[in-house]
Image (tube, rainbow, N blue to C red):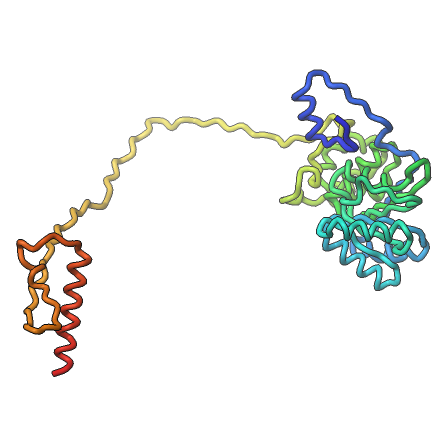
Length: 330
């Protein structure tokens, strides 16, 4: 099997179905030609930092967002600031995406704002900068994003903008830096330590590193419900062997002395038998001698020929209508 990526779920399935499979990997997930820069700012100031960044960088830049709507909105705001930008996401057709990539490769557009659809299989020559405006959903996506630069032996830089209140996503950036053997900035680690689940896995490590664990502990927030296990910090890195588990309390049930039987409770309702319904036969209407009047008399006799009920009701209705018309004419 040949693949540019190897999802962990597919990897687990492969090892479950095959016997001692051999995996050949060319290269590694760590690219020494890519310099990663972590920018920790207040979340509301992320766009201001990006706008200042484009005032000093006039080369082609690939910016990643997590949502399609966010891509369109960010591209619009950049164009309002004087930076030529276009957005690319999954809602566009293949032809539209091809035209946007051609414009980006040729230099007509200097900034491409895209979702993770551009993180795999995209090769743009001389792409020196990649910006993660939104933090990737997992470490693998982060690696593929920044891998769009620093290709074919060239140098590249990747910038990840981390908001100070993005405590659920900051641990992903920490693990991505650790997997590539790069230094984790203290301000990034401080944001990540506000995540209680990530904090539990790093307590023993940080006590010996000089990090202000007591301060981070006091500012830790409660875990956010409704997020994926990766976003909540439940995924355990390979180099972390300890994790804090909740304490379970045991309870002992003591039987009561001389238990009294419960009184028998009788239901307070009675069964009502349905009453018999008597079917009253209609009274035979009086037959009026008239040539136009329908004559139901043959069908009211006991020895009348069999007929369907709806036919008999139709004759009765016609006869009653006739009587009504005669009554109205008087």
